Image (tube, rainbow, N blue to C red):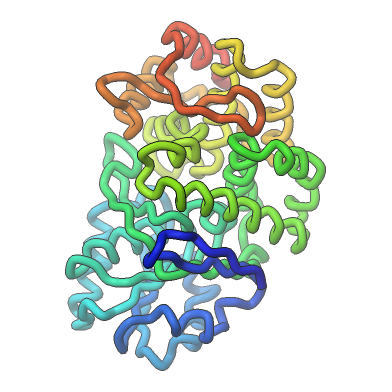
Length: 361
């Protein structure tokens, strides 16, 4: 087992990475408050891992809560069903919530924890690669609105993150590739050596080589933990973690949540960011090609969907949380491993990128 620490002073917490960790009560119990726990999962993950977690936590009379699976269910209405289950069971503010699933479950459970009786503890048990390397770490929680992704939420840190790599054995290939988009993002935005390692190791990752996956998860979590420790509430450097995401969130909203997986939209978004960076004269064409090749090898889309007109994509991007004073800010690249947040770009070049990096209808 590898253990990292996300340093936030008295709110610091461990990130444990290893095989068989969902059965390790000794990793969970030090972070539980009160006498009861609730485990929130979905209809896909619960049949695989809920019973194991109920057994691990049996001393706390665990309440299982199973939600429908999919980004389209990341809503206030579904969050309300979680709150109703907790209230119906009479669970108090000493209850600890567990998020057993991917990013949607982690975000809904974390936001519920932030709100329920004005705040209860929660623990992340991510079961997808994307959740393990990104959404489970850092305390971003929330739900979507029909006009924008993650527009309702809170910064609320978990007590700990338990990453059981065995759960990747049951992950569909498409979900594995979606997670790799976020892994590749970390190399592209801050770590050129990691990006080069990914180029050498992508086939091992796709074949689920345990050693390669564990290192990719560890390095991704190290990068994110260091950035979050320095900027918990995204006042500065943390915004760099959104490389590709302004484009991606617009793609998800434009297609309808759940049509593309989040990681698939991030992949196309990274390409759009790289292309615009190149048009600005910041990113060499060879680097754009390296990024596109790696994402393609990871079996990810490298073009914006033909179903969304560029004008509509730009309209959706205008409601992004990084818009300030009416100016759209984007995370762009000045090289692989060198990202920056800026509003200093020619809108005409952005329009060129949206037109040129779109799949053929």
